[in-house]
Length: 327
Image 1 (tube, rainbow, N blue to C red):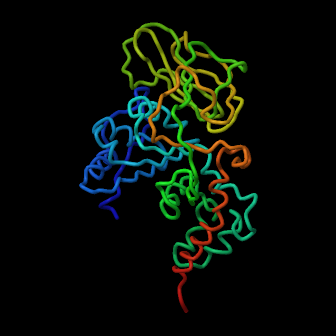
Image 2 (image 1 turned 135 degrees about the vertical axis):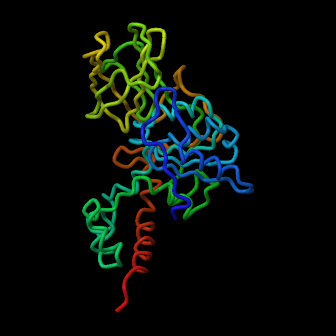
Image 3 (image 1 turned 180 degrees about the vertical axis):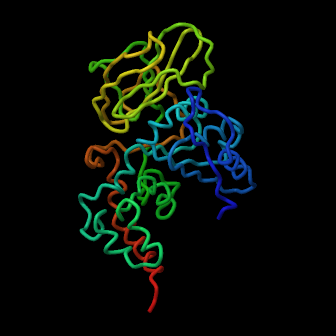
């Protein structure tokens, strides 16, 4: 196991979207270059930093890989890497699941023994050493936000993007929402949820490296880094994880940036109405279905996974039984 486990990027990418090679990015390149008629499936749990770095260092691998990425909250922290990929590799084969994955988490319509607070007692407890240890993590509640990427390859035909599959059903999108503001925003500014938002500000010219964080934006209780773009220009990216009404405050040691505030509204469906600053994508970029009947608790496309939640968990329960110690 250790021979195929590699360390990926720990810090998030700066504004340019990539940094230095990591064990993880090198491993992606090595695996993608292996002679095989089959594509290499890259199931991204977390940020896109290692994938962005791999594509930057070996752009030719984009024709050999297929990516399933859980965006949403992960996109917030990986927005710079995402922007780099969307701008420079629009023809990448990509499933961008920003909300559909929540169909495996939301259990409002689940049978009682398959709900998050009952699954441990009914299906895990007492099954081997893993069953004993499971209670120590999240109180025994399964946390499977990224699991749909694996489920996508476990059941269903991955070549049929709009078909029936444990990992969801997706539709092609030809653009990814992007809005650039050269001012502080207000509640009059509405953008699509999950879309890239950039704020660009003017300030003094400084001799700063493009990897140095020179201001932070606190928004939705979290802080995100901003960078010097050169020629007296500063920039930061953000993307909302859901439909939200947001307020932000900027903090910096540089007076012209410090203590600035603003607001923003995001809504669904994604990717929303076309905008001139959108990233234009190729034919193989897919994302959450936007039919109203496929929403679950305001989560776009979530019912394409929720309808298989019980089947997936039942299959998982059987595998837990394999670990049960026989008397």
